[in-house]
Length: 449
Ligand code: HEM
Image (cartoon, rainbow, N blue to C red; front, side, top):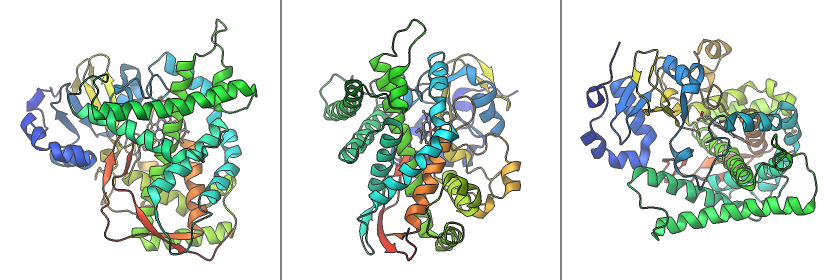
């Protein structure tokens, strides 16, 4: 059985980490990938708290599925309680177990089916002003669109007027949480410019959520959406959920529900612009299966190219690019690695999805690799854009449906050509987005709905 010997275990030394500070700050997914390439499936990172980078599927499955109860959430999600608090993404059992059970019905196929019309309508509104030859900043458009969609579907509220500003506040808050994790930070009450910007962003988000809750309470309207359900829920003693928890759940759902899908769409359009043959095959599929219609739920099983393109985009650019856990007790992974109580384990889909043992030529965008046989042959823990185990994404079906509808609704009408002479980089926060945005030129297509 292997024993971890701190810095003697395969991985960078403290000095090497220090020397890589710039790469870590600017492109941490690629840095972690280079560590896996150099050192293999298990890498030790001598950070302030001992951290293991794990890539082998048996270990991934052990931590996230079979022994999930021995590991809790950690990292950026829990780093700053002011931001996501005890929402579903960051909370621990038993609170998490109770809240997950409560919210699950909102994400059943039946509920998602009812969102389809709203997703299509909101997409058509977003692109109503787009014209042939226009140049647009795609990531901002996608953030706005997905925020509006989650606002309308889960909260029955129209965020049209505030989507851009609210989206910026989510980005700012996240960026500053991550920056704090990378440095020895001053307490939040110290009046630094960063703390000031953080407070302002959180205040803006809090105000929007409080307005939402207040407006709903005043209207006394009982809407069958997520907010209505949170407000109606009673604890066993008859008390209500509590404003702080409602706020945490609402912010978590707004964030998790819009940024991920938005980034997935931006990266997908980027890949399609770079791969005109795939783009052409997609268009042909839409023409053949949908004609001039936008897709309905029942169409998805008849859109295999769309499915593969999105699967491959999620492989190369998983919006939730890193998963992190803290060991609650000592444990031994299937690879023989001994994890001590309090050790951190990071399992980055960005790295796991590039394991050459499971994906040939892993950097290549190749939707055709997603055959039924290939899907069946992949062991648990090799492809996990939506996570796996008890904390897997509650919004997976919602996200897949939304991405397919937005992609086809836009793609039937426009080809999006990424403008040359711009830097394309990754900004890895809680989610991974194009660092410098993505400027595209619109090329109108004949097919219109
Ligand atoms: C492409 C889009 C999406 C991706 C790639 C994605 C990815 C993920 C991943 C990897 C996790 C597991 C995190 C972990 O194990 O640490 C997760 C959890 C979660 N996601 Fe998503 N997600 C997406 C869309 C959505 C949407 C649309 C919603 C809601 C409307 C949502 C809500 C959540 C919530 C609440 C959790 C926490 C679940 C729990 O811990 O019980 N996600 N997501």
